[in-house]
Image (cartoon, rainbow, N blue to C red; front, side, top):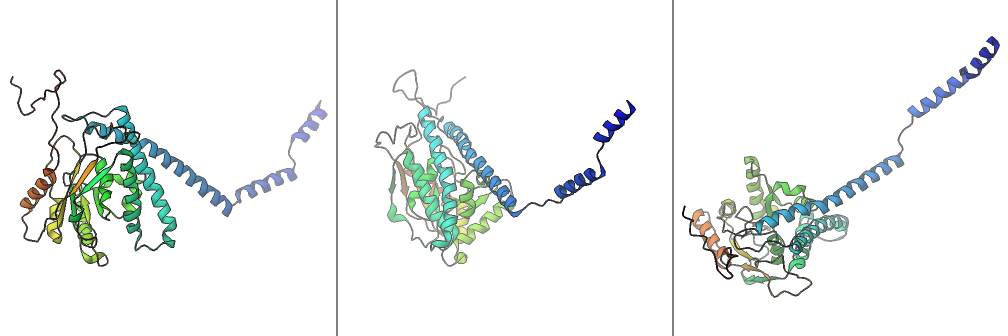
Length: 346
């Protein structure tokens, strides 16, 4: 038994040569370096993963836009969104996000082969305009009135419009002019749209930061003057500061401060969206209604212009052609209109 035990132990005990061989294999494994091809594969796999994640985000974020738009149409006298209406809002935003992303990517690839003055010009004049019109075409036609009131393309100005719905943004591109948006900074985190805002060099504002407001005015001064290469670039702004369908919100000071500081005219623009617009079965059924964009005569501005009067005049002109704020109808009696101005007595 002792001899058998010694024999089995000698068979299972690793020899010195085997141990040296294993150490050599381990050292080779530890000294292995990632090759150039491995780095390429790792980079490509990471890009594919990020692209898939980004595109999936495009499918989810429009749901939040549907929720926001639905709340807007719950106001006094407005027709709430139907399921078909919410589907159109979703498609509108999906086209907006995906079109902005693929448009910017395509422009980056073809930029070396086309003759455009700058990358931001290409984004403003081609990508944004095409995507904006494509989005609005899904929902219905846009009628533009007062085109003769537009300043020359080389003349800087401020476009000031009312803001009622997401449709305002798409409809604004029917001006067929290049301009810079003033928008809250959080939009850069929206898929596709963020690329447009950054590559298009739009003015981003953090409403809670004074330094951000100061930077916004500096950027506005740059685009509205001749510092950017000789020709100024218009700025498009919604002076209301937020969207609202059921009320006429007062205008804020930002647009008028910029106009007075740079002595550029303000062009009031009225955007009228028909009630029950989203619920229309367009494009499957032709629609006689349209979004009406009215371009008013420019308001001249100098350093001596009174800001309060300028704001009141601009607000009055913008709201002058819009239909009256609708009142909620009484469902108990057909055709009877509820007077919202009368307070209920206790």
